[in-house]
Every structure is written in C-alpha cells, then in structure tokens.
Image 1 (cartoon, helix red, strand yellow):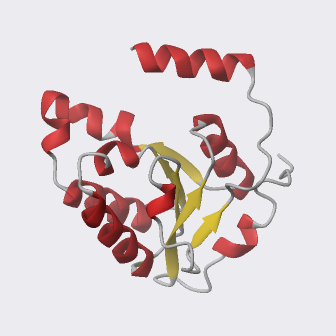
Image 2 (cartoon, one colour; image 1 turned 180 degrees about the vertical axis):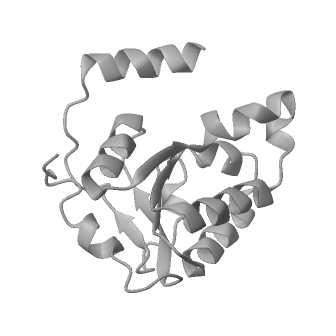
Length: 160
C-alpha cells in the first residue's frame, strides 16, 4: 500500500540500525481512529496489535486494577518479536493519574527494543513530551476520510 501524506515520513524515522537500537515511539493523532493505527501498520510494514482487545480484555472486571507493568511486559515481549503498532494502550493508561502517565511516557521513550514499536495516542496526546525525538505529532495534519465500514465497526465496538 502506498503511504499517504499522513504517514509518509514515518517509515524512514523508525528504521533501526541494529537489534537493540530500536525505539518505542508515540504517534499523536487529533482524534481516535483505529483505522489509522491499522493503516500505519500497513504502510510501515509493521505488525498490528490491539492492546485493549488482545491483552487487557482478558483481565475481565479487574482490567482497571492491572499495573502498568502489564503494558511494559507486553511492549518488551513484542519488541523482541517484530516491529509493531500497538493500539489502545490508553485503555490502561486511563486508570492512572496524569503524573504517572507522564512519567511512563518519558520512561518508554528512553527504552530500546530489538524492533520498533509505535504507540498511537489520542486521549493523552497532550501529556506526551512533544519535544522528545521519539514523539511523532500528527495532530495538525489532515486526516483521510473514515470509511463507512470503519465507522460502523467503531460504533459497534463502543457498544459491545
């Protein structure tokens, strides 16, 4: 798939020179669009993972009680396997106070992985350290139209 103007420069940013030198990067969007996270994965050749659906939902009614180490462990495991766009990390981050989230953002941006990890953010984009080179701020860029199927899937997920 040919990259559009929204994600065109990200593939060159995420190239890691050697194993262990890859970064976790935060990709900031102006609005929540899971379709854009999937598109980002497609355009960069990275795998796609929905943290909320694939990890957090398995915790059931205790999901909100899970420590951030659950997210850290998932990032570490994924960063050893393959480059990945990991969506919906904000589901767990939402259970923490702002200071803890800001600390977590700073910490995750300084970690190194075998493969690049991209974390799309919307809800807490204003809390990300935008002056850090690991933050890719796309909030001012025009978003492509969302397909009807994508909107219907999102509205169904919100109800379900």
